[in-house]
Amino acid sequence: VKVAVVGAGFAGLAVCLRLLDLGIEVDLYDQKGVGAGASGVASGLLHPYIGESGKRSQRASEALEEARRLLVIAGEHGQEEVANFQGIVRQTPKELVPLFLEHAKLYGDVERVGEELFLITSGVSVYASLYVQGLYRACLVKGLRFHIQHVPLMQNLPDADVTVFTIGAGILLFPICQEWRLHAVKGQAVICSWPEELPVLSKSLVGKGHITPMKGGKKVCLGSTYERGILDARSCLEAALPDLTAKARVLMPGWTNITVEECFAGVRVSCARQYVPLIQKVGDKVFAITALGSRGLLYHGIIAKDFVDQLRG
Ligand SMILES: Cc1cc2nc3c(=O)[nH]c(=O)nc-3n(C[C@H](O)[C@H](O)[C@H](O)COP(=O)(O)OP(=O)(O)OC[C@H]3O[C@@H](n4cnc5c(N)ncnc54)[C@H](O)[C@@H]3O)c2cc1C
Image (tube, rainbow, N blue to C red; front, side):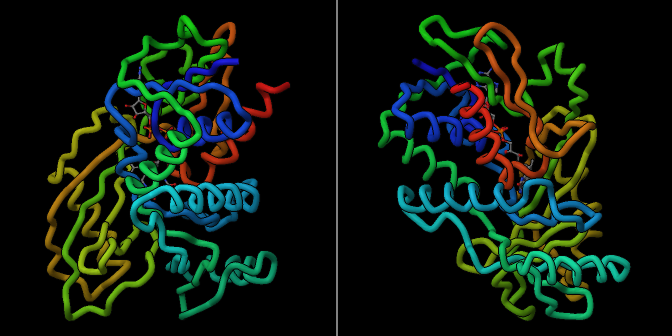
């Protein structure tokens, strides 16, 4: 069997690795390059308590385990560390504190570290672009063939037995996806220098937004916006800054002089029905994996596993 994977983001690379591990021949296509979509700009937060509700995500334990397995593989094939495994601190509104205390008892991966602060010990801050490069290298070692090429939507590639589209926001150009209740949510984040007078951040801090330390500790990533219905992936600092500075004020009230060095953007694809991504059959031997939403890091590994299990029947 020969499989063509279209789209070299978290989903496509996870599918490639799983297929290659089974000895299946894989060709990976991307119109721009590895990590050229949302995966290359993701802020890197990987933990099971995503979203304002603070509820544990569906299938979180198996998803985390698989994501961590992939991180280790990418780390072994990368040139630098691809993630910080020290946990993530969650700022929790008072009304959610009882729920978090409950999580601590049930799952053992939550510790209270302040009045409204909880350390999610299973949380990981992933250096997204290094991660995709590490995963890509791991695939190359196992025989992946990579092509920079635009692939017309939802056609089986001529010499492939199966084609799977993992094309992120590209899927929204495909009319049938309206039936799947997909929508675009543009995300923007900024890289800022971290003031010396503030304590050094060793872990990501998440709440309504997030502040994530970059490698070296002198810069942070402040994110992200949720701009619904916008498909334009170009960054626009003027549109992003008011929302991001408001988020920073709540997360870190002492951070007053926010100095932005760079702004970047991408488009997430979410499904109105569910948070776990979708696998859709869109033709004879043609599939799409979509709707990783803002949980791509959590779910890319298990959705790749589900897909490959489905293929093998
Ligand atoms: C600012 C921002 C911050 C985020 N932060 C986080 C976070 O902290 N944690 C988290 O889990 N998630 C985060 N996300 C979400 C995460 O980035 C996505 O869930 C994930 O990247 C989606 O991966 P994907 O593989 O489906 O798509 P993508 O990464 O978008 O990959 C799709 C690829 O397909 C290619 N492509 C498209 N059309 C074609 C075509 N016709 N032919 C060939 N190639 C094509 C594109 O070039 C692209 O490389 C964030 C997103 C944004 C925008």
